[in-house]
Image (cartoon, rainbow, N blue to C red):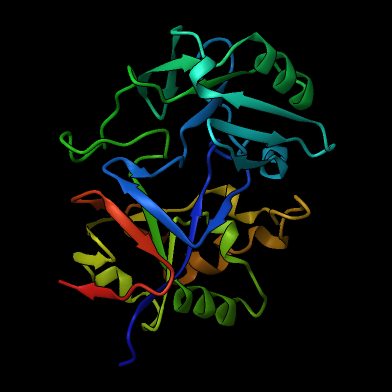
Length: 265
């Protein structure tokens, strides 16, 4: 078997918005640096996602020296300077977990509310923010759905495309790390791996939702609820959920970069 290596790295600074491709990243215990460190919620604290507002997928971000540069689909932009945020924390609910999150300010709330057509507030995972993974209460996570990182192999996507008879892109599945050089769904059998300086536990397959059925470039829905329809034919488990990709938890902090070999430990 050929060597398995890291082929792409992705972060999503604001949950549900477009990703950023990286050549290398620093891995924190709660995920890649700057991944899902911001989130949008309604005034009551329920988080806002692309499941209900798919236009979020067209909001682009770029990292700056002290924060984040955000561009809306209409080309308008706004910039967050993290050191300038007030020490004002509000509660946001992410899949049943209440998180104390740092409020970014009225200017951002007004900007996002106007762009989305609904009342919204921008929140940051600040120094006083805490959250842990559902199955491992000693393992931290930020605003990701449940676990610090998501891993998918290129071979798994190729297999899905062949089964469906059409082409889906990896960005529909919003992974953090993508690997190549292995068989389709080989990642399902991994339990403990090393990428670069970091060891990871492979802890849980990722159940997939309606977000995967949107083309992230056009925001159009694929016909017949694809790719979920095809995945359901051979990736549905006894619980009724459809799985694609593996959630992983880092054991230590360190750097990963493109071309790193994946060691199965």
